[in-house]
Image 1 (cartoon, rainbow, N blue to C red):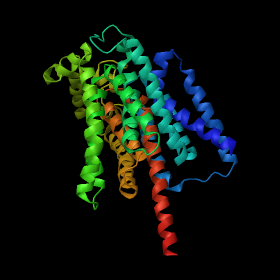
Image 2 (image 1 turned 180 degrees about the vertical axis):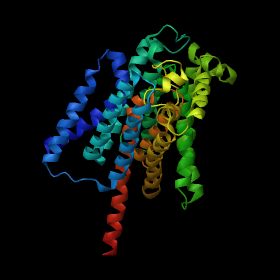
Image 3 (image 1 turned 60 degrees about the horizontal axis):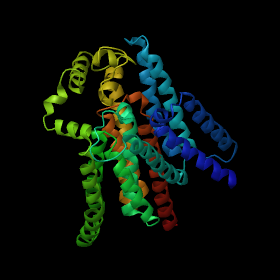
Image 4 (image 1 turned 135 degrees about the horizontal axis):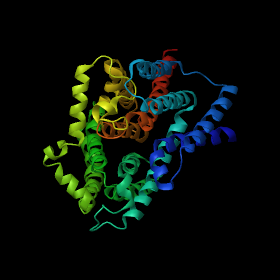
Length: 406
């Protein structure tokens, strides 16, 4: 029992750290050896589990098959790749991605997922402390001369995930509510100082989406009671929290100027910006829509060099693997969302399911405008964990129905 608890804690911690490895490497100047250590720990626990009474999750085999098919197709595109260097790094990342997905499907259970979400929120809080310390304050700071400015995207996403998780637990959890309220307020302050307008806007959008989801899932309940319940939670806590987030963010000169710039969208489409990257990507896709240009080629056709990328995961995958790859990528993203909605419909609103759904939506939005898709460990980890978590509920319902029938 002791070894089982230790191994479950280690698995949850390793997966949570993998979601925020970029931020940890920025803060502590850690080398790539951290991936080797995390992989070694997961492999060791997997070996131990296989020696014991490990049961294969047959219902999850299809999801792994789809992910494996996606990776295999991208590797196959090396047959016609235009890349001479970048494909090597992407190949390593894809192999590591398959490894992580396999480890989750073999090792993770509901208890580990609960610990994972708590640890992930704590890691985000820790990164938030770093951001606040580096910023030096809230009022009248420029945001241009801070250490955060150099890696604000890498630091902001974990804080955004922590903000969403802690807010959800503050309004829906029945235990340690006061702690989660304080944690949500702290995460809000850290996010306002993170300089990332995208994470800020997407976090607000996701939290505003939750009452709509709550209302739609509560179909059949007393609507007056449901509106009252949702209204109290959001009117007296979430909306003031979001108002405070915007107020503090607008006191940071760099964030305020970038938010105001969104009022004139043509600035975002200036030469050298995302607009040019997306335009170049679409032009290249139109010339080879079915098969793309091969693994690692996306930077050549979007940014004019191998080290660039289109700042949109679908365009990046489409450029490398063509229509087949992008359809598989969409399927990989839609399956967790579908199962999460199905589980929420069966089990009702509960903080763990809601946290997985919300953080997954946040990551999808983030990767639609920033980041290199091949380093998207967090989106695959949370997506796969969501599938495992939902199947545990679906199997539970089936077992109950079978017991009732007998």
